[in-house]
Amino acid sequence: MALLISRRVFRAIGSSKFSFGQASLLNAFNGHGCGDDFPSFAPSVSAKMSFDMLRRYSTTILTPNAAEGQFPSNSLSPKHVLTPDREIDKGLMVLAGDVFDVPIRKDIIHRVVRWQLAKRQQGTHSTKTISEVSGTGRKPWKQKGTGRARHGTLRGPQFRGGAIMHGPKPRSHAIKLNKKVRRLGLKIALSARAAEGKLMIFDDMELPSHKTKYIVNYVSQIETAKKLLLVDGGPINEKLKLATQNLHYVNVLPSIGLNVYSILLHDTLVMSRDAVNRIVERMHTPINR
Image (cartoon, rainbow, N blue to C red; front, side, top):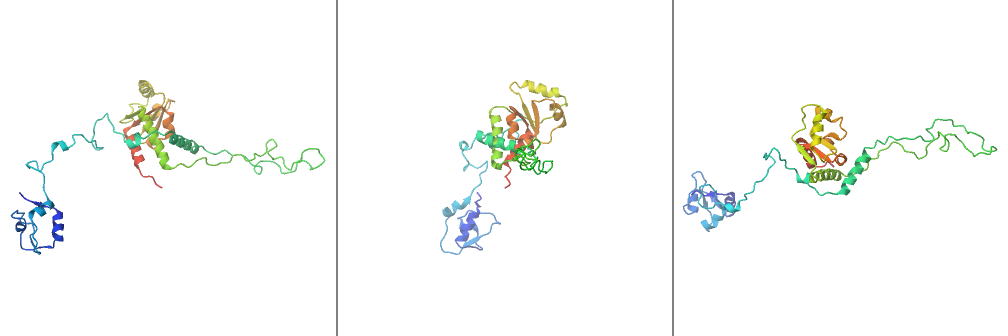
């Protein structure tokens, strides 16, 4: 039987000051021959290395015909490992646990919703100060002798049509929220819908026509659904957009626009496979700082 030598043999031989020479490996291993092309070496020291000492550096190859050295069958796991590349079933989709199965935290949801509602405010409210109000700058009457209160202008806040003191000015209402918290909020919202059994996944969102009756018939088959949110992977299909625009209880979003507040407004979440894959990829993308 041919004996295969691993790289550790050469390291061990090199450390023992063995030099390659004219002697063959056959003499060094007590008659166990190797290939003709294998280089030969001869010991340069008086100490002889026995076969039993070098046997622990050798490697063997397990073949189906080998009589000994095989793995016991009971040590091999009989379970089937699911891999993402393997197509398991057309009606089954394995969801990422770190996206659709995270602990529910209401405090995170509250913070994310406050951040969304504050950020979407336009902040275009504006009032006029005393320098911006239209009117004359003339003193309305003399300082003394009239019996009336003294005033220097009719554009003051105490007069009708006058200025507004400390009124709102255009500004941003956005508050700061870390990206990790925002991402966690979306994971919690998706996990809540999945735990409630109100997350449905379809292969695609294709419709045979733009008629609204197709969406109405589908919604009528879901008994507990009152408001549906349809999420597609890429741009919204024109047929789907036309079929849902007359229904106040059905809304459509692309996967890039999926957010916590929209999920909470709808009791049922319907997603396509492409949308799920894009959401998982988005959640796994490192956060840019």
